[in-house]
Length: 285
Image (cartoon, rainbow, N blue to C red; front, top):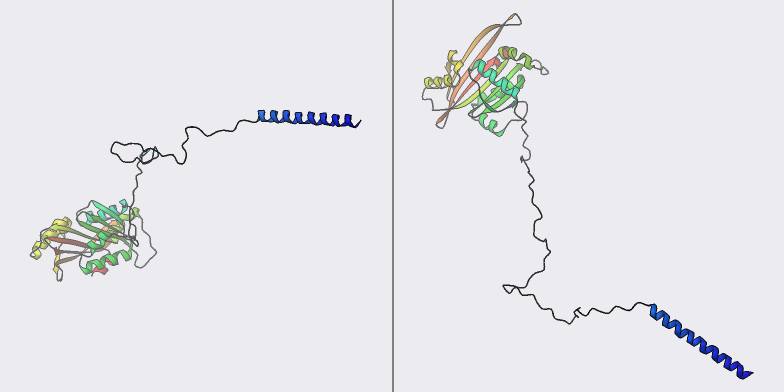
């Protein structure tokens, strides 16, 4: 009985062992093979052979597009640099050109091709300031007085000179306004103008100075200008009275003319000041 039991156990153990062997083989057959290093891969100890170049230098490794522009384009940039603290000057005004030239043609017999013209209430330019500085001190003071009293004042620069015109007299009414529809009324009753131009040659006498003035301002040839004393060149002055009609009413106005010549190197600076109406005449007399 015991012998049979031992044989039975031995057979069972043998069957179990055979089963385990068969299962192990099956699993091994299903597992993928382990990859082996490529035969062509160099080991860390392998020595690289440098690539030969025509001049014997070692090549450098670069990106295929490094340093090569893919495309070029142009971006236009327009810059206007203005020093800090310098006021911007607005665009030239056709209205200012009209006022200044209408006054000049009416009382001086001339007109100008202005490079710039604008309101004297706003900013002026360095060129204007430099030009005005060449005028006699009393003429400079007229520019300030006229523009302060006017309802509207304008300044302009042309190639060889300058001009300014003030219209309307707001001395007694600081809040008064003007309209371009009434420009002719202002020009004949309450207005003023200052003009200056550089001309060739100098004046050796009062007669020479008058000739320069008449050439620069033809309408002054009909005005009886008289010489007055001055410590800056030659100066002439005249006062006239004029009557007219406006809206079927008779009007009268006083006019004052001041003209002068100042030497400037080999040239002469010829200027003219005209005041229309008691207010502007009073500022000059």
